[in-house]
Image 1 (cartoon, rainbow, N blue to C red):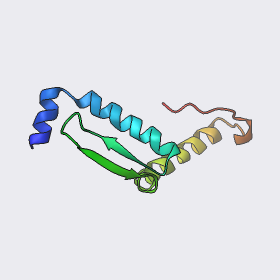
Image 2: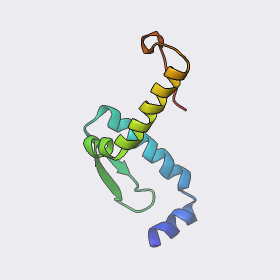
Image 3: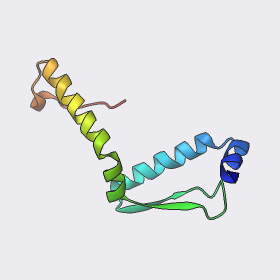
Length: 88
C-alpha cells in the first residue's frame, strides 16, 4: 500500500507508463532487461526476460494476427501485396 500511496503522491502514473514502454522496447532487442522504478523507491527494479514477456503477450499477438488476416481477406487483398501495416 505504501508504494501505491507514494505513486499517487508523486503523480508518477505517466512516468511508470513511460518506463514500461521503454522496457518493452528494450526487450525487442535484448534477451533481458530491467524495469527501473527507483523514482518510486530506492533500488526498486524488476528484472525481465524476453522469453517471459513473449509468453505473456502471445495470446494478444495471436488475436492481432488473426484480425489482420481477417481484414486482409475482407479487403480481397493478397498478403504479398501489402508493404506496410500500421499498428495503432
